[in-house]
Image 1: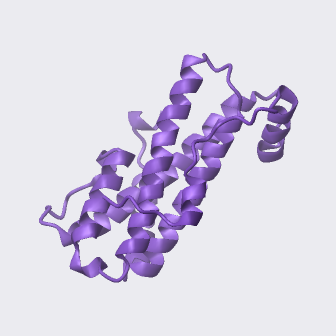
Image 2 (image 1 turned 60 degrees about the vertical axis):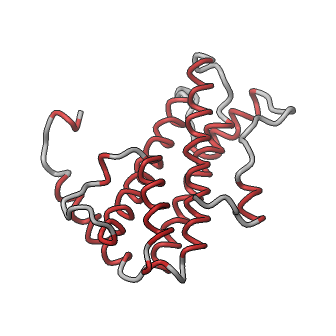
Length: 191
């Protein structure tokens, strides 16, 4: 497991905290600037819907990368990483990329990016747990920062994989198409 992360990335990995001067007006303005809220809309609901959508995309990217990289292991071809959690897929990728000969020239960049992904997921658990324990009375600021960190980590991971791992971009696009086609089936799980 990589523990060294570039100085630039370390600044991104500081715990998300609410600034001391934060107040309800700043919190509302932040929400309005991101989600273009109307006065009747609940900013917390929109923040969580947005975070959920971004986190779901992040999870799909990790699962796609894990599926692609599983070909370098002795796992059977029907292995489906999407059934694993985000944390499990990060650890799976970390292990495979750290050991696979195919990853030698790109190892450091991808492992650093995975370290950031691991941190973002840990922050999600902490921030959402705090929000729940506060019964939803907390600020939107941490949720908004978390959303931004998920976006940055996902973009960094996709770029690292697309640029550094030969064949990943085509595989990712094929997987996206396969998922879209599979999602057209209607079932209880689409509720």
